[in-house]
Length: 118
Length: 114
Image 1 (cartoon, rainbow over the protein chains, first blue to last red):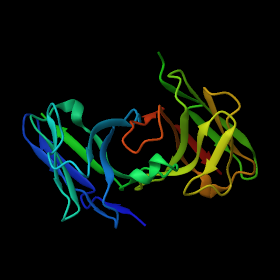
Image 2: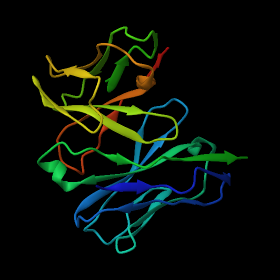
Image 3: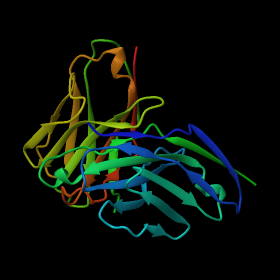
Image 4: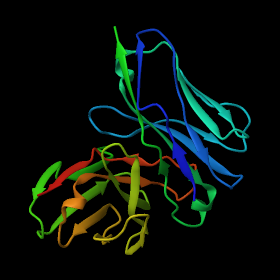
């Protein structure tokens, strides 16, 4: 079974600085997707970024980028130029491409709470 | 375009009571999901639906039932609530079942079972 581990329960960063959130996962599959979701205090889960395992190029969405190390099974999220609105819980998630045939779940880590100070 | 909405937002039940959570989406998505989120945990899939009239079990289905009578609605039922079902429940929907597809989440329902 696949597992996702986020080893940092809490992180903090100052406005305009850069922070990196860690995520590791365990799988025997070769094709899958990885995601970072943001959950602000409103509780609404919002997709931040996704990465396909077969793509070597790291995904980037504006100030958010990932460092995907497939061999190490590592998928970290870097937030540049942090803003107060980035304060939230961030979840790393895994999904097998077997989901294309069956409804395999998004498998979530336990989350990292990010606080941003001015 | 409201996206995914959930009713109610909060609910307190006594052990043994029943209730139904309603999820509605206006994006014409075929696929819908129910997750639960417990403190210090990520979301776990309870049940999902691949279309009107079709449902399937997820990772933690025990104690829950679901129905998808209309494409836009996905109901989650608790027949006899237990304290272990105290959680935040999220509904999500996606256009396709592909692993890459974005799942759009509702705002959640906080359920407390006393």
